[in-house]
Image (cartoon, rainbow, N blue to C red; front, side, top):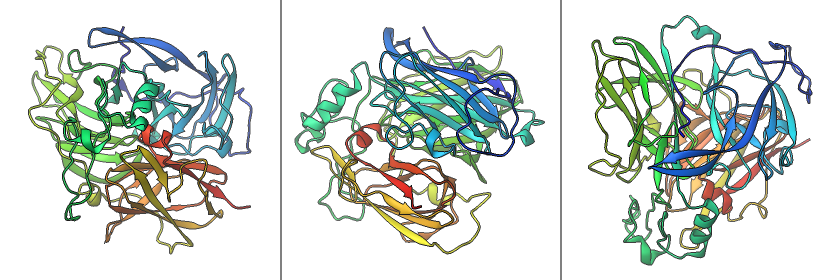
Length: 483
């Protein structure tokens, strides 16, 4: 059966009291009882076949909270294995971040855990497992924090949750990648000998490198690419009003795929990335790396019509998406493959973004350097030459302004995510910026991106590549506060 994410009007839901309080905090809105989220098994229909996957049941098609609410949630583990959910983009106390080994241990089968922290942000976020390959098995869901200031807006909300999917177990895909076996069903090989035959790969020279280093765009060819749990063979159709206003909230929940969002005949206004507002950018095509989010406002033309909103797989022809359609519009069949491969994401668009609410000007008190390192042929990934478990954590002190310089020494781009904080992009290559505030930024192959953040949330925080296969192969470390 299909599990859809239908369009919903903007609204705020107050959460309840009753979850154990871990840290003192300011008063926030409360109702009668905590919400219950359950990690569970489910079945999708993908390309006409039953697909056993995981899911997070929250009692609503899309989970909504409001800025100023308390995040009062009881997480129930309905699986037959341990699990734990990370609230991606939120800034909870460290002990409630959902990161095994750094914040709390995995939740055993049949057990529950209470979360309770204030929601001091609004925007488009998501939640996903950080245990093993459970995120690749679709244990993830949207998380929308509405802004009370938007309550009077006459606009329809449409959430688009993107995912890549394989009928093969991610553990088997990972074993093939790390074993260097080349092309296997449902994946693309990593060895040099196989790269020439692998669809979805660009094995030409790196720009500016003068040859000598191969560039790889996609590690894995998935069996399907889903938008709201559906392929373009049977897309989700969101009914909209002629002449109406729509706010797209687009989340890339994929384990190993970047996309271009293509609005087709429509033009949209990008107003926020990763939950933070930007100076609005008009356009028809926008890049979205793994774990990133885009908020796009658009106007539906008058009269009847159908308007596909597509996600084009980076460096390849595969695509997915949904259709915005008026009540009587005829929706034509859409091909799951486009005519030409979408280009690599790069950083050209990122360099044009400007934060609407930049961090206050301040000289960094500390500079951290993260060299993104690895061996593409052996599928070994690391930070500063050390895989997670052998790494040296970064140290910061509360109250510091921290510069984080990410130097990519590999032939693949890496979407880098810092838990518990948002940061501002201030330099790409040698170009200084007052860029977007984000929690995940794409660092291009052989490129450098510098961000700054304020150390205002004490604890131990994961810092990692959000390509799940790269992270599981070692591209992760932590940022830890000194006493």
